[in-house]
Image (cartoon, rainbow, N blue to C red):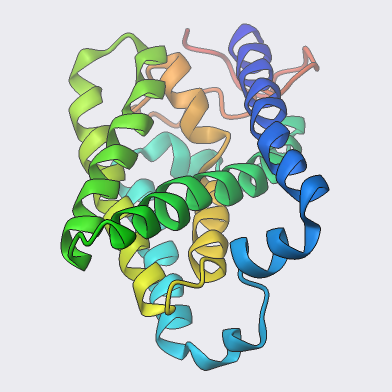
Amino acid sequence: MRQGRTTALIMLGTIGGMLIPLITWHVREPARFWGELIGVTDQLADIPLGWVMAFLVATGYVAYTFWAVPFVRRTAFEPSMLKVLAIPLAVVTGLLEELVFRKFLMDWLDTAGVTWWLQILATALAFGLAHSLWSAFSRDLSIIMPVALSTAILGAALGCVYLASDRLILPAIIAHTTINLIIEPALLRSSLTGQWNNSSDDTDASQNFPSSERTTPNPN
């Protein structure tokens, strides 16, 4: 119950914080927001490689997460209020993180004359570092490096999607959003409970909020 409420509060805070810049950009220049930033243009039909790569990255990373974190695999598709919150969370994180780490940062490096593979490497490292911070919730130092490495690889893959899409960010946004929609909130809950590799069938996989009803005992 406590972890469910904490997870919900973190998700709500993340949604609210990330909505601020997105709403600000949209209100100021809606046409530029959807066209130049998000990439909703006629050119989307001309980037089949980008769409194929986006699909492969999303399915590949979800499959890896299911393998690496059994708790996520068991609970990813269970209906709950937390899963409802995961929908806006997936959208805002997919939008803002792809705009920041791929659209803004990679385009800035490109303008500065940095070669394409260094653009991917730099943004991947930044992406991995940023995402390693949430693993601190688990208070388990042994998980920080694997999280940083796996998300850095994801960042590099999304960078490749961005370049394969002729620097239209929408395919990368959709891939990122799909990943988050499937693996959250289970991945966040696993960091709060420390259930990274707990494969026991009696793990409480129905720890929703704000209901106090449980269908299985909580080992914590």
